[in-house]
Length: 498
Image (tube, rainbow, N blue to C red; front, top):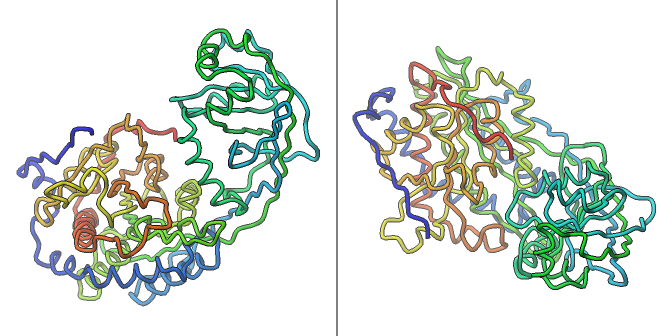
C-alpha cells in the first residue's frame, strides 16, 4: 500500500487567497445541500428503470430531460440560444463480423481475443502472422512486417504509439499482448463480452484499415507454438527466431448516428458576468449488459451529477435572495464520458462561452463511496483532489482554505502524481478543459469493488460523506465565482497526451 499523502496546509497563507473569509451567507446556502435531496435525485437517476443511462439511449434522453427540467425550475437559463442542450454529433460503430484464424486455430472473439482496432473489409484477408516482439528499430530491421499481421509484446508500456509505428512500417494488422497472465486478459475479455453487440460510440471519422487483435500472453504463445518465457526472450532481440504462421482475418463495420446531448444550466453573474466558472459531471453510464443486467452507475457518475444539481440549487437560491455570484456559472452535465470523454471534448472544442472567458473547471466524478484505501481507516472523511496545482498556483490553496474553514475533510493528493499508474487525471472530463490551459480541480472518491459493475447501486452510497464533499465543492465554487481576481494561469500543462 502506498503511503498516504494528507493535506498539510498553512492556514494563514491560505487565508491570503480567500475572497471573503468565513461568510455566514455562504454557509446558509451550503446547508441547502442535503442528504435527503441527494438521495432523492440519485434514487431516480440510478434506478433500474433508467437502465444505466447509456450514451444516446432512450433512458439517456430521459436523464437529460430530467436535468434540463431541474435547471429550468431553478430559474437557470438555457445558454444555447435558449436551449438547455448542446447536441454532440456521435456515431455508433458496430463491428458486426470479426474473425481471426491462425493456422488451424479459429479464435473466438471476446474469449480468445479482443478486437481493439478499426477497419472494414469486404472479404477475408489471408497472409502471415510474424513475431516482432518489442517495437525497436533493431527488431524492425530483422523482421519483414510489410503486408503482414505482426505479433507485438507490449507489456507494461503504452501500446498506441507502438501500434502506430508498426502500422506506419507497412503492417497489415496487429496481434498484441499488453498484459501477462490469462486471468488479467479474461477480465478485459469479459468486459467486452458483456458490452458485445452495442457498438463503439465516438465521433464520425474516416475508417482506418487498422485491425488490432489483443490476446493474452498464453494465447500468443499458443499461436506461435512457443512457451511464454521463450517468446518473451525472443521479443527482446531475436524475434526472427520465431516461425511465422498462416493467418486469415476479417473485420466488417457499420455506422449508426447517435442522438446525444450535453445538458447545461446557466446562472449569469453580476459585475464579472463575462467570466464563466464551469462545474461539470457526466450523466451517462454504460447501460445494460448483453444479458440485461443494469449498470446503475450510482457512484459513477450519478453521485457527481446529483452533486452538481444540489450545488446549482444552492447558487440559484442565493441569486433569488439577492446574492448572485459575481462571475457566471455554467452547470454542465456531459455525455459520452464512458466512451472516451466525448461530450467534454466536444464542449471544449465548441464552447458556448469563449474558452478565454472560462476561468476554471470544477469536475465531479464519483464522490459517493469509500474506496479500498480508506475502507479500514479510522477517519473516512476524505476526498481525492486531482489537477488543482498544475496550471494555477492559487487553485489548490483556495480549495484548501475553504476545506479548513468549512468542511475539514482529508484532502488526499496521491493520485495527482504525474506518474500515477492509474492515470486518473486522464480519465475524466476536466482533462478536456486543462488541455486549453483552464485551471481545473477534479474531486474523486477512488475505486471500489463495484466500480463499473452492476452492483454500483444507490444503497451503497455514503450520503453523509457525499453531502460533505458536495458542500466543500460549493464553498470552493463560491470563492472562485466571487473573488476579485480570477485564478492566474501561472503553471504549465505537463499532461497533454492521453
